[in-house]
Each structure stands twice: as structure tokens, then as C-alpha cells.
Image 1 (cartoon, helix red, strand yellow):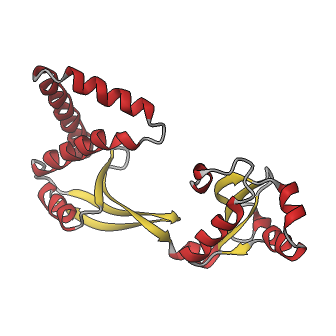
Image 2 (spheres, rainbow, N blue to C red):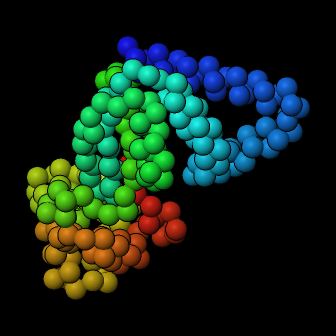
Image 3 (tube, rainbow, N blue to C red):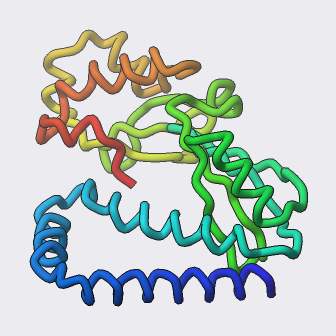
Length: 212
């Protein structure tokens, strides 16, 4: 399979790059980066490794002459979309990625495709038409695909202090949350998150980050 062969080339390049790093005597730098990676539990320091891998993918693609199946994979705050872009040579894929700086190449060995991955800080069209925020069975604020009755949870955020909410919020607000608050854009999404973060059991900055 072409993508599997391409992936083997990338792994070799990554191993070669690492050997070169050690031969240059960068032991202390490597130890420092490793320490920082463990210190930051949110994975912020994963960026250097991701950049190295991305660079190796691009270099391997440049040498790939046979056409590859390419897909655009859009990952939204809520929802995903996949669109087939067609078959391209490795150089064409690299040119495409250079033309769209926010796209990253991801190889799917199982399907034999190259995915151009794009993260979008917005809701997908499906979510804009179907998303609700409510409380799941465990008392977490959650995003639902369709009305909460269907129990189709897309993602959960943080656990709510239900007793505190019941003593603080008017009944109509509680009923609205129970039935599901319609979410059709990012303003509504952020507004509901901000409002109910005040009722998180452990309110802090992490409460605003989605938990999967």
C-alpha cells in the first residue's frame, strides 16, 4: 500500500533526525524538553514533536510520485466534515498544504489516504441545525445532537452543582436547561458555557475546556 510505504519513509526520517540530534551533543536540550513535556499536562509542549513529524511527512510527500487519495477533514468545535479532494501526487499535496497554512497532513494507513486536517473554531452546519446544551444523566453540562431526550451526547464539559443551581436559578431557567438550550452559533455556545461554569462543582479555568 502506497501510504503504508510512505509512512515507513517518514518513520525512518524521524529516526534519522533523532540520531542527528544526539550526534550534535544536544543531550541537555533533549532532557529539558522531556521535562517540560511531563510538567505540562495539557500537552502544550507536544508542538515541537508535532512540527518534526509534520516536516517529515511533507519531505516524504515530495518524493512520492504515485498519486494518493486526498481528503479534507474539517474538525469543528462541534461536528466534523470529510470531503474527497481527489487523487494527487505528493508534490501537489505539499503545494496544497502550503497554500492553506492552517491545514496539516495526516496519513490514514488503514484507508490508504492522506487527510488534510483543518481545525475550525466554529460549529458545523449539522450542529448549527441540531445542537442543544443540557444536563446528562451524571449531572454534567453536555452538548447533545438533537433534543436531550434522545440522549445522543456529542461531548461533556463539567459536572454541575445541581443543588446550588436549584437554590440560585429561577424555575424557568432550570426547566429550559432540562429541556435543552438550543445552540445555533458560537455566541450561544460560549454564552451557555460561561453562564453555567459558575455552577461547576470545581469552578476553574479547566471547567471551560471540553472534557471527552
